[in-house]
Image (tube, rainbow, N blue to C red; front, side, top):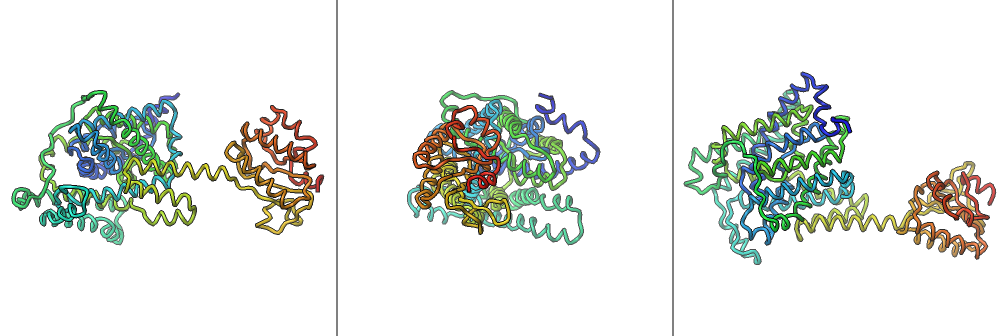
Length: 567
């Protein structure tokens, strides 16, 4: 293995240029502006102290910059991981420990260890086992949960006294704090205006796209600053009970790790495994999307290592679990980031903010942070996508819809598990019922097409069947039943040609069934033949006695050759 394979940073440093530096420097400032409020907001979303989100924004991006293969992925606290952490911390067996911060740090450590283990086992291809519809359904469901979880801080609602009756929630709604509602909705309005409306206005002025991104993405920081100024100016905390972030310890986190006890780690392990899986899949999906835009390549297995190292670094510095964030990555890319130096600089700016500006964070209203989360998370709710997926593929649409409902009704872990199970069942159903076409020859050509789709010539004593799937234990019985059904419909058949143009693999069970079918057909005075079999298939068949048993049946190079001889 080359050094650049293990440490991709040395690959892009060799060709680093002044123009790269200019893009990275500009993007780092814009991304840091997002990292600070999002770090605080996502920590509160997870139900832990805000400094854990800021700590997770310093070392983890640096470690990913060393080991990750995406040049623009922004690694740090993200909403989906935050809500999964909250789900873990609120579970009865974890909440009873009354150690949310320690639990969050252990989750980060376990997430990192699981990712590193997956990297060692070369499990980077695991990203392919969660279908896009399931991931979209999960993201939409989790985003809806996040929206509802942010209504109390946005409106200043008291926690319901009970959870089993509707009247409990009605009583909680009556506790809304007018001052909190005012700051929350003012923040929402400001964030919305600083988004698409401002972007559209700036485009009309002819401003450069990078500057438009810079100005529009300053919205969260400006909103936080104005909210904190309003708290200080009008004594909103003391006189109107507007909840604020509170004091955040100044300075950089110390590198230490409170290991806790074995039972604590064991209880958190299932949650960490799910966080690792979702964080990896989501991060790689984002990284691939950006890489495709830039004509670059992502190494999924090395991404596991980079993300694992980032989570270990987060745990060592007392932070929460991290992943690649979609909104920050897009901002980083749009602002002109060329390499991970942008994230190295951004994490440095967050460290400076912790060292010198943490006293100013205390007055940030929680309602403003809730507004930031709502604006960031709402685009991830894609209900229309379920209908679009359904129109294209009903089984995928069902999986996406059921995953979303499962997350909402059953919970985060159960919902994603249900979606994955449904996807696997759908896949097994499809592979166990392969497409088989009765084909004939298009007049005047040597092309053979499905008799149900084209006007073709067929023959009374000859049946041509094209199998469009590999033959395995899961589907070979269906193929056998299909042939039996065709023979009942066409009793005069004397030759059957199986066209294997789309068959790349035949397992031992399928071969055994085909041999049994050949014997049955011989008893009926019907000869079985093969045509257009691929080289790897023939190589395997030649290692058996099947080709000898097939005689007088033959293996034809072309289907037309079989027709010339048998028709």
